[in-house]
Image 1 (cartoon, one colour):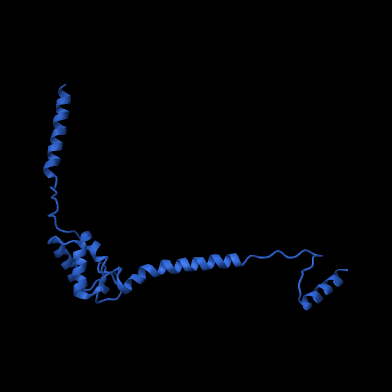
Image 2: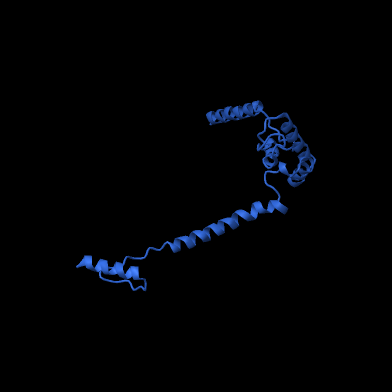
Length: 160
């Protein structure tokens, strides 16, 4: 019994000792993380560099724009409000996905329409490629054309 009490005391001591040396972890302060910023930055393109998303652009300007996104998130702006802010500042070319309005709507409408037309043309072409079976020997083709009639006679003479 005494050994059990000593073992429990030692175990309790180790537990208390490990709790004393444990590093306390604190919750984040509620500010936006880099992932939160990059979610929006992936949907924007650098207006200075060509075809480089804002989340991977190494320029100083893009670092400032990511900081602006972070500030707007702290202020409680939504993703759409932040994107609208950048569109107002730099134009719609900063968006990774153009808005589906006006001339840009062709980007969303034209590919499926062209795909459907191409599929229809391919379907019709494949149906037109039917191979007609060859006519068996001894069967003549009826035609009013004198050349075909002459060809038929020549073929009959060769078969004999």
